[in-house]
Image 1 (cartoon, rainbow, N blue to C red):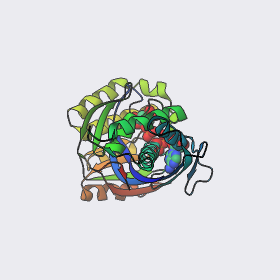
Image 2: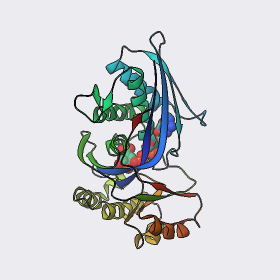
Image 3: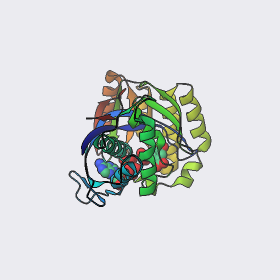
Length: 291
Ligand SMILES: Nc1ncnc2c1ncn2[C@@H]1O[C@H](COP(=O)(O)OP(=O)(O)O)[C@@H](O)[C@H]1O
Ligand SMILES: O=C(O)C1=C[C@@H](OP(=O)(O)O)[C@@H](O)[C@H](O)C1
């Protein structure tokens, strides 16, 4: 009973920590999960390739929740291998959870699709991962915004209070320039009270996103949350005039600008002078998939 699946990371349009409503879009950076189930094994053991001390609670909870709901409480092993840096604001936890849920469903022989007649719909599968993330304590709101963007691809707008999908559209830009400084910021440690103080700007950014103006939604969001969480706004100021939108991604520290390849090349010349890594990636129409 083996299964493999892959899910993309994502960037933020609107951070849900202020109002519970959020928006995110899929990036072409993937996490792969390999699951082996054994009806005779008790418990689930997780490993993260290249991170022997990484916290495997999330992926173990994902397998347990899937076999508890769709299987017969099999035990087994899960391993992830990821291109998405952890705790950098690029939704490594959503990608790991989605890939693990799909790999486990595949190991159980269940079909997952964006189709009400499938054994399990992609949105249902996504909600299983979100519940596991809450249980593992790696999220504040459950982050259904990030998880749905990773699972469904394109861009989504959600209400994380009840894991409700408000909108899902194709990517609003072809490319994203991602600057990741050397430090890390775990979402579970984020100052949620500071985020709530910028709720009026988060609500405005959500309105813009629901109107389809994702680029400006990102920029409004980025200025507000950078100020609230104490991240510099100069990367956004350097990029704003030459891209479609730019924002602190999630609770940081990465900053993501979106637009066409040529405009982002200009932004890259400025961001390359900063510490850390800058990379140009494509946005993604396709979400998570079974391999
Ligand atoms: N490849 C992975 N395999 C297993 N768990 C992962 C992986 N990547 C991230 N996680 C889990 O997600 C946590 C980081 O989540 P979070 O702070 O929300 O960062 P991000 O913004 O990247 O999602 C990690 O501590 C770990 O529990
Ligand atoms: O934990 C959470 O509830 C959230 C964490 C943030 O993302 P990161 O995990 O990228 O910091 C944020 O963007 C998202 O809307 C909600």
